[in-house]
Amino acid sequence: MANLRDIRTRITSIKNTQQITKAMKMVAAAKLRKAQQRMESTRPYAKKMQDVVSRLVSVSDVENKLLRKPGETSRALMIVIGSDRGLCGGFNNNLFRYIETYISDELLQLWEEGKLDLITIGRKADGYFKKRKYQVVDSHTGFFDDLNYENTSEIMKEAIQKFEDAEYDKVFIAFNEFKTVITQNRQVTEILPVKTESMDSPSDDLISDFLDYIYEPDSTSILDEMLPVHLKMQLWRAVLESNASEQGARMAAMDNATENAKELEQELRLKYNQARQSAITTEISEIVSGAVALEDS
Image 1 (spheres, rainbow, N blue to C red):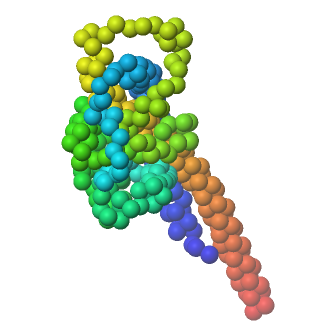
Image 2 (cartoon, rainbow, N blue to C red):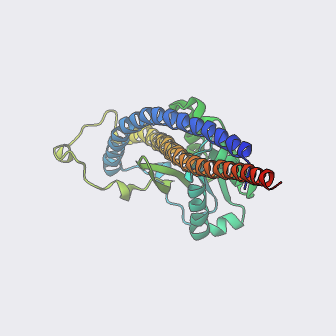
């Protein structure tokens, strides 16, 4: 059994750790509220953007480059959204394993032939996939230190340009979608080419479904402008979803760590009391034995 000094040292260390995890939980909770507000305010805008693009696609006669359907996929790009920091439970590893499973099921031939490129967002994604010899063509570390639409837009702008130049036939986004504070939906979504069939669902606004719009200058010109904005908004929404999911996962992980520290502290205090009682009993026994020995002498 460990001596009393060692147990006291461990109890002090665990109490300090508990204070740190509790503080990190509070910080994550504050960041989560802000992240949720940004995410929830973006969702309706992204949905309405999709409705507008859907209507434009249905009335436009000209084929847009972003709508082209390649006969076969010769090269693909995947944008992976992870996190810059750890201590958020299985937030990153669960997503990365899901991505690897998706690649092995859907994109195995491209990966084996070296025709699957990755763009990573966040230090954890960059480190994970580079160590496993995936072809990371661009990485954005420290991305969430200054999270803004402009940086996200530049990433999607480059992907759009390479798709239009036929360097890529498909573009995917992999991210954690926010569901609840402790639950995330792992997703790999194909965003290019733009799938018009996924936009055919009716709008929630029944009146607008029967309106006949007049477009100025024309629907094709507006579609050419709206499609890139729509794609940039989809990546921005995915980044915000991932950011909110990360803060929720970190808050839950730090809460579990705090509770585990409490339980461990209680166990150590019980051991400390047992060791202390044993030491006292031993001392009393030694005193009694010494007194008996003196009386016998």
